[in-house]
Image 1 (cartoon, rainbow, N blue to C red):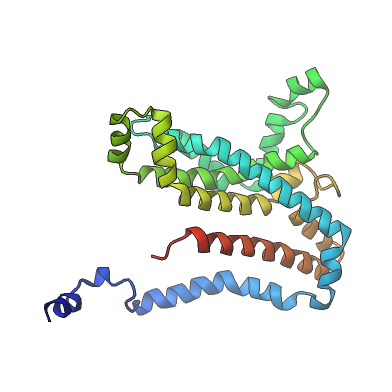
Image 2 (image 1 turned 90 degrees about the vertical axis):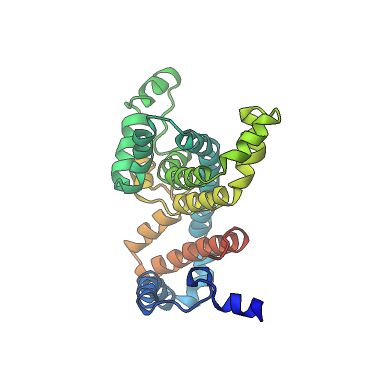
Length: 275
């Protein structure tokens, strides 16, 4: 009897499966509609009888393959560079964290075309870094597959860094102190204690970065161009098809939508826990 009474008097905040307030439910439905209705329109308007031909078309396969390869390479680079950056931002007492975090966040709010112009200013043939490289080697980065990867890294890294920083700030410092007291060096404590604790967040951030890299358009078309077989990724193919055949463009867009959703759903089932 006592146990039943204690359960019945549990605080509402602990009842995660309880009924939602009507205002929350209505707002959630409207928010979902804003996201889902345009995607539903894409599915309804898709040229389903021609989808097989669109999917197997060499132009589609080439753009899809380039998108998957470049987005994956960009994600690996983002992990290698972004995780250490997140560790630095999460360190207590780092005075420049605010400025550095603002700079990291800029690509999230910067118009993608402006990002492409910024990449030209830095890595173009006459750019800050591109000019000495071109003078020494005769090689220019713009309008190459490497330029596609760089553009994707530029726009995708903030997703990983901000996600990882938030997770790192939530790590119990007492666990790190315990590892240090047992003789672990800072590097070992980071590798053996901290990173395993935030692994789900790192995976989520990496997947978000991968999805953003896969869908990158503005910086890519500005900095890398739209050349079939070289720099034409799937979003650029959608843009090119839209100029001549809107129905076919919808079909290509649906392929990209399906690939992205499959990856996000697979990862969310594995790593994202329900509230």
